[in-house]
Length: 73
Image (cartoon, rainbow, N blue to C red; front, side, top):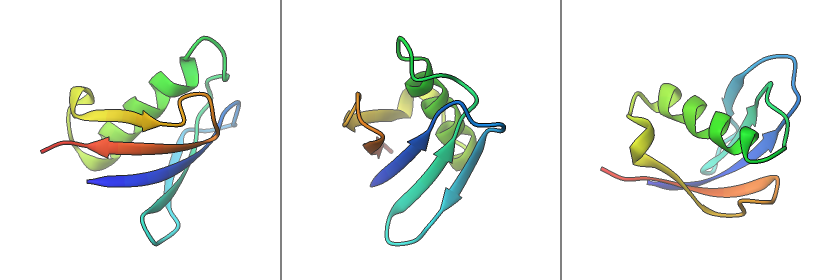
């Protein structure tokens, strides 16, 4: 499954919200520094979709706020 995520680092809470059309908004408490927000994003999506962290990967936009995500079966 592939979809797009808009990440919002330095948020007050961790939250995953589906906006429709294969697009999600994700808020994370972690800063966008040294990959901390990306690691938090993977953890949050793994929890949200009830899969292991190893099945979630960022396939595009690692340094962008809009990322392409893939969850493998």
